[in-house]
Image (cartoon, rainbow, N blue to C red; front, side):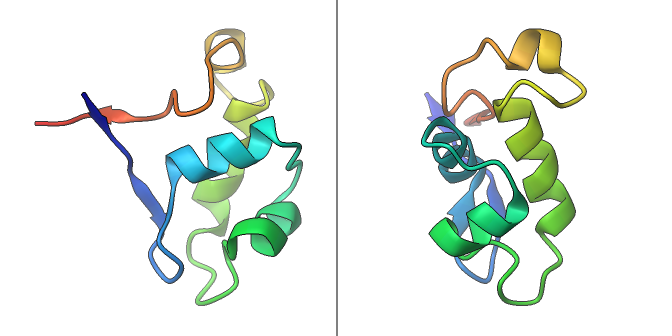
Length: 79
């Protein structure tokens, strides 16, 4: 079983939410802000949200592997 990691505490947005938004077509932090409220509060989540979005879209550092993973693939195993 997996658990999601909170990325935007202000709006309770998880890495799973961001990966799902990427599947639905989000391409930028601006898209994430419009759809999920990411980086609309304090803004401290913007860099991590961008990294997760890029990986989910197959453009980030792990693109060769993460780009092939389904939405929600950025989940951490639950202890």
